[in-house]
Structures are given as structure tokens and as C-alpha cells.
Image 1: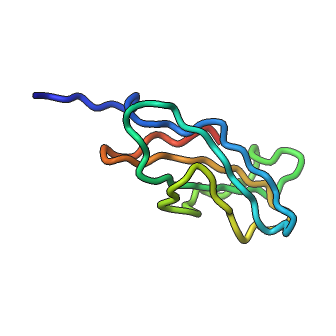
Image 2: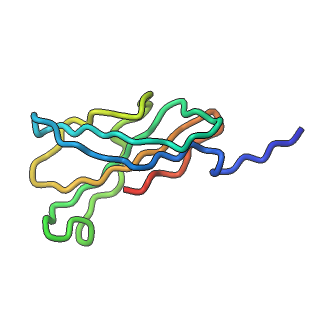
Length: 105
């Protein structure tokens, strides 16, 4: 038996939302994933940031970097958020077949 696996089989996270928490140094991320037979084992979260308030992601932007690995649910608390920075987050699902593409930031 041959099985062809593609990214279409991966539960790609979407509708990622960030909610600033009262402490102002943490953000709560929530997302959904496409319903299919391949359930995620865990999620990986990356972030990038910019200092520009006017055009946050058109000027100097940090590289994407892992901030959370092996998140088991479709939500996470991101700590150590710095004032004066504009953040963008993206999420990927990991299954027994590999990692999905990252969600749209």
C-alpha cells in the first residue's frame, strides 16, 4: 500500500488572534485548525517584532523566532512582551507526519 502525504493533509492553523492581558507583559494567543483526520500532536509558535508604530512590518523587522514549542492546545500565553514593540505571531501544527505550513501572521 502506498500513501501520498501532502500539506493538504496537515491541520493548518488559521484565525490566529492575540489578546493583550491585563499584566501588559503577556498576550493570549488563540487559533483554530482545519478539521481533518490528522489531529495535531502539538503546535509551534513563532513571533517577529518591529519598533515602528506607523508602519509596523514595512521597515526594520526582527527575524521569525520560536517562542513556544510543543503547545498541546489551540491557545497559549506568551510572556515577556516588551512595550514599544509591534508583534506578529504565526502558528504551525505538528503531527506524526511532520509540520504544517505556518498560519498567516
